[in-house]
Structure formats: structure tokens, C-alpha cells
Image: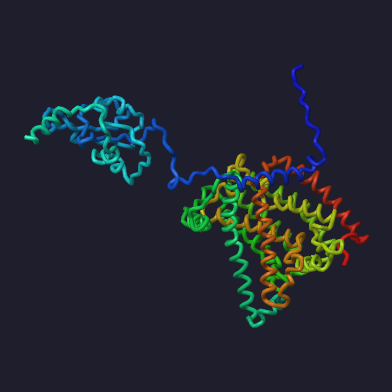
Length: 176
Length: 357
């Protein structure tokens, strides 16, 4: 047999008159009017973001408020959409010779929020923040300069103290 | 020419021309304002039914959302596609709108507040409501687009089919009340009693009146192209149907006409089946004062708003009919039923069952 006979349910008179069924349906929809609403009123209410959320990539400073970025350009190199622009400069002596970025721009219109920059950074200087509200009136405005990135990133305490020796020396000097 | 006047006695001091101007003002102002409220209501109610919140940003409870929409409509570019028949294309929205507004002017709001009160009010109303099909059909044809044309054709077929059953359902009321004058129909319902206590609202005149009401309300849905009978628009098949090619205020006019037709149909159901301005004697609470007229108008509008809510409620409850199902329902179910119902009503009338004084 190439077909499967389907048993159609025998409709009662009430079902065939349709109107009782319509009333039943209307009661169901009416009950939803008083149900709890699922809408989240966005600007007032916001999502609770998970730990792993990747928002705007931002630069961070260490406990002492020093720039952590040493302008190694690894993030610039790894960035798939090439959103990052770094121009290095020499750092004024702080006990150790280092570079620092003179320019550190991230073009947020190009950024794909992949997080490679955070992964590749040897200095733990760039992190994916939880900021996701990116607004700008022009393309230029959407290229975030270093200052803005630090503003978003803020301070993140280090796990290891790279400048500890220099700091100690400076403290000892003061003590004299 | 000497026009009949329905100027209320309380407004005797008003010159006749001023009364006329007031009527014209009301006819032109009430539907648009009410429609803007209805659009808001529809969006809010549909949202609530779907567990959403709906527009609640513009003004208190989002009530000014429609004003914002209107601003958008007015400032949008009025695109007229190439290849359209410009004269008809421009005329169609007005043709869809004007009959609805005219029909609105025929409804009696209260015992002493009616803008017009024709002897053949019901006939006139049916004539006007079927004129609305021209706007839709012409708009669909003039757009020179297949979607619009199909929508227009569907609309005309549907409205013609359901006009018939609607007329037969209304004929039942006419049989009982013995008049075509809308205010007299309401008065009949107020004067008569069922089982000694129930006001003889025609919907209570069982079974013919009740059946007529069910047929009428279903046909009214089809007549105003509302879901579940929104064949002319049928988003899933025809884009937007007859107003696919319309934009800006022309589209808004179609919209306005459609919603005004909804108001007229709700008002008609109130008047024909639910006792118009009467409500268990409340309508006579302030006998002979202005307050009485205000109360009656309030009752009339409350009932009409109730029907409008039902319109919206049904829309978000039932799935759409298929076109052939729609036609089958109209011609093979409702037509025989309403014909038999008419006979039943005639029989009830002859033997004076229901609605005796």
C-alpha cells in the first residue's frame, strides 16, 4: 500500500459550528493579556553579561597607573580585520628601557570582537571589556584613540609585578 | 431646497448653518482621532496578547505613538511608481475614505444627538459601505502591479459575497423592527421587552436575532477586510495587496478608510443588535437634560468600543482563512443559513414570538 490512511477525528457538533471554538481561543488570548510580559525595556533594563562576554577591546593600566602596553604590535599583526593601528615610541627611562605606543587606535567599525588581541598580548595590556554600546555620528568618531581605550579599560591589577624591582629601587631612593 | 433638520432642541439657539458646520466638523474629526487611538490600541493589545509590551514610549502609555506615526506619514516621500494610471491612482485613496466617513455620519449616537436620521438610513449605510470597494478595486487596478490587482479583485469578490449575507442578517432586524430608520430601530429595541424584563435588543431575540448577529459580525469582519478574512491584504501571498504601491499619506488614507469602516461596522452592530444608546434604563437617568444625551452618547460609544476591541481581539486569535475557504463559507454556509434565518424571523414575526410589548 503506497499510502497511509489517516483517521480524521470526528468533529462534534460544537466543533463544527466553530463559534464555541472561537470563544475558547479568545479566552486563551485574553488570558495572555494579564500574563507576565517578556519584553525587556532596553535602555532602563540591561542584560547580565556572562564572564566570557567579548565587548569593546580596551587598553588597561596597572596598579600604579602605568601604561602596560609596550607597543610590540603583536595585536596589530594578529588582528584579522586590521582594526588596530600602533605607532611605537620610546619610553622615557623608568629604570628599564621599554617602548610605549604613541598612537594606539582601534577602528571599531572594523573590529569583529574576536578577542585575538587579548589572547596574543604578552603584557596583558588589552582586554575585551563588557562595553557594547558603540555609538558615533561619523566614521572618524568610531576610530577610538588611546585615551578613549584607557577610559573604557581602566585599571586592572597585575598578577605578576613586572616593575617591582624598579618600584622598590625608587622607594629606597626616596627613603634616603 | 429644504433639507430636513435633526438639530437637537437643546441646541435650538444655534443657527442651523452653525449646527451643520458642527456636524461636518464632527464627521471629519471623530474618525481620524478615534482611528489614531485604535491603531495604538491594536498595537498595545496585540502586544499584550503575545506577552509583549507594545509601544509605550511616546507620551503617557505610548498614546502619542499614532501622532508620531502620522508625522512620519506626512513627511515621507510620496512615491508614485511609473506606469500607474495617475488619475485613478490619486483618486483611489479618497474613494476608499469618503464612503466610510459618509457612512459614519448616518449613525445615531443618542436620542437627541444624531447628525442625520434618514428614513432609509440602513439602506444608505449599506449603499455607502459597498461603495468602499471601488476605492480598493480602483487603487489595485491603477497601481499596475500584479499584487495590487489581485488584492483588489479579491477585495471586490469578498465584499460582494459578504455584503449579501450581511444584508440578509440586517433584514432580520428590519423584519422585527419594521423600519429602516436607525434611530427607530433603537427605539423599538428600547420599547419592547423579552420575557417581561430583558430589553428586546435584537441579539437577544432568540433564535433568529442571535443567529442574525453571528452572521452579521462575521460578515462585518469580511466586509472590512479584517483578519481572519484579510484576503485583499494577505501579507504572505500578496505583499500588502491593493496598497502595495502606495506610500506616504495616500497609504495613510487607505488605512484611515479601513479603520473608519471598522468603526462604522461596530457602530452599526451596536445600533442594530445591541440596543444603540440604551442600557437597562440607564439611558433615561437624567430625563430631559443635556446629561441624558451625554450618558446615551457614552453608552453608545462604550458598546462600539467594545466591538472594536473584539475586532482586534479576534484578529490576534484566529489564523487566516484560505481564499477558497472564505468563498465557500460565504456562499455555501452563510448564504443558506441567513436565508433560512430570514424565513425563521418572518415566522417568529407572524406568530409574535419575541419582542412583544
